[in-house]
Length: 93
Image 1 (cartoon, rainbow, N blue to C red):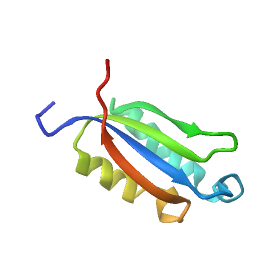
Image 2 (spheres, helix red, strand yellow):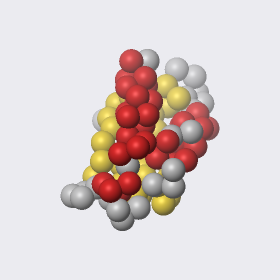
Image 3 (cartoon, rainbow, N blue to C red):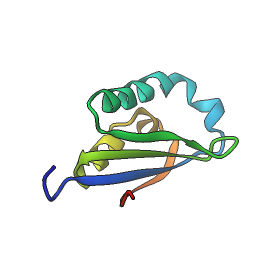
Image 4 (spheres, rainbow, N blue to C red):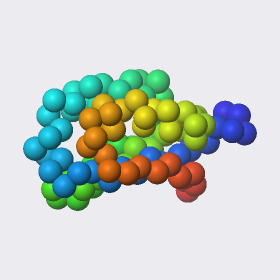
């Protein structure tokens, strides 16, 4: 891992009616997450809240810019299901 690569966590805030709107985009979203897992870059992924109000995806070995690019291409983001997102460095212990 280079100095610019580290561990990052991507936080999503979902639209209020996420459960009603995500179905057409869910499989494509999950395929992208599975691809990160297969590449060894996924630490954790999942929704938070009941019903889901947001999501968290933890990456390793990617730069902040690569995580931002990943989010920009996420079907949930493209479909307007994510109200906001942010990428933060993540210090695992």
